[in-house]
Length: 131
Image 1 (cartoon, rainbow, N blue to C red):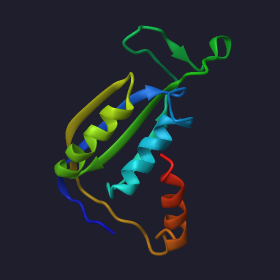
Image 2 (image 1 turned 90 degrees about the vertical axis):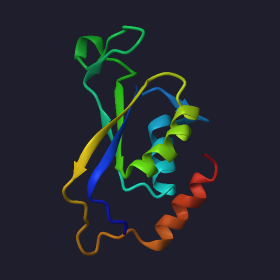
Image 3 (image 1 turned 180 degrees about the horizontal axis):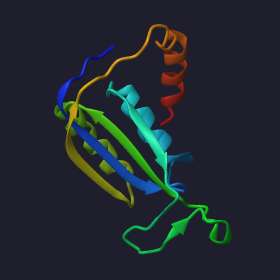
Image 4 (image 1 turned 45 degrees about the vertical axis):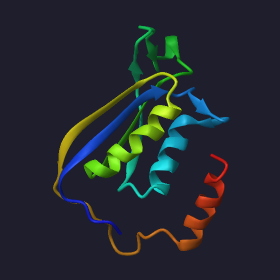
């Protein structure tokens, strides 16, 4: 397990639920690439509503149910790891927004028994080769 503490960067990638790369959800591809490249961790958030550069509002309200809700991918790691990952993100993102801001990591750890089994990593790595 990697240790990160103190000054770090938070990478946020704003995209849409319908965005894809080679037939896969873009957020899944970005998250898998981040894991493969050894970044400390990442989370995908699905928004209730939002709009981007085209000013079209996408919402989860029942009367205006959108099939393209906002997605935010957040990854936190040391500055060199985030900066090295940025060209990958830029190559994948046809539209969206990418931000980087400083954060201070106070705690980063997992509990006992939370390690992923080695064969699960191997399976995910072989699946990701098609990325």
